[in-house]
Amino acid sequence: MRIFSGIRPTGELHIGNYLGAIRQWLELQEKNECLFCIVDLHAITTPFSPDRLQQNIIKLATAYLATGLNPEKSIIFVQSQIKEHAELAWLLGSFTPLGELRRMTQFKEKTKRHPEHVNAGLLNYPLLMAADILLYQTEAVPVGKDQQQHVELTRQIARNFNKKFGEVFKIPKVLLSEGQKIMSLQNPRKKMSKTDDPRGCIDLFEEPAEIQKKVMAAVTDPGKKIKYQPERQPGISNLLTIYSLFSGKSIKFLEKKFENKGYEAFKKSLIKVLIDALEPFRKKQKELSSREVYVREILQQGRKRAEVIAQSTITEVKKKMGLIL
Ligand code: TYM
Image 1 (tube, helix red, strand yellow):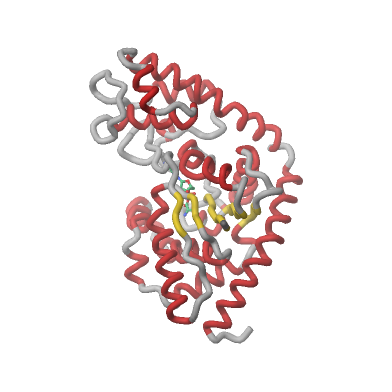
Image 2: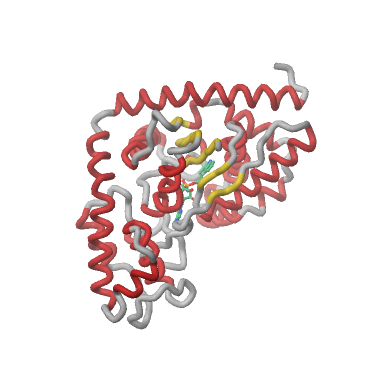
């Protein structure tokens, strides 16, 4: 299968990005043809600092490598280095109804959160995401739950194009993982996010002392039962999910193991699991952070490989739309 996914270079990666997306990518890269993109053109739709953007792009590429994405197996590249992404987004926008873009949950949330920054980029965001996916004839898109709606719109856009202009695009499906929605440690009814309260968010390369502080301060629920009941006990259920995914133990097993043990013992054990699981990532990231030339070289190779596919699709699209090549 051809796989495509991406992350915005907006700062640190958190364990939600890892459990929702990258963990699946690592498995998928073993048996599929994968493209993993650093989607910088999406990152500039919310307030950002031009001085820091380039550094954040390199940092995210380093993080991809530190988690185990392998440039010999997967194509790792930067979105803005391939102009066909923006070009296809424009073409897709020419026949996508405005109402489809306006009804996107992320558009509504982001315009609420940044009322001083409601730009056309935020509205057109899903067109660019559809272009990312469709340019590579993608068959499956591994993402967290919050991106499912965008992939569904991508499917609709692909179908509309194929019907209107003739078959070009494959119809991609969404791949959700068990960690599809990791919640904030401070507000377990909201998803973990880079832009929220930093105490609610554990970075993938977080220092052990910080992990300890954040887990000990994580909001739990009234009562003392360690039981997976996301509606009634969202705090402990979220921590159980995190524990289970990082340890490989089932939630049922953990409920039994911590029956009558209380939150403190559970949290102490979770801290150890997290510190141990994240240690190899932290080490690799430290090692790679002094090898920027190598990281840039990988992005150049990725760019060359991705470009060939992107150019072939856009040629097909332009032909079908009657544009001069
Ligand atoms: P972004 O950068 O917000 O997030 C990257 C990936 O992490 C997932 N994720 C989560 N999963 C579980 N729990 C959470 N709390 C959590 N927070 C984030 C996201 O679902 C995503 O998979 N629009 C995308 C980037 C993008 C893209 C694409 C993805 C652009 N083009 C094409 C796939 C295909 C985004 O903003 O992700």
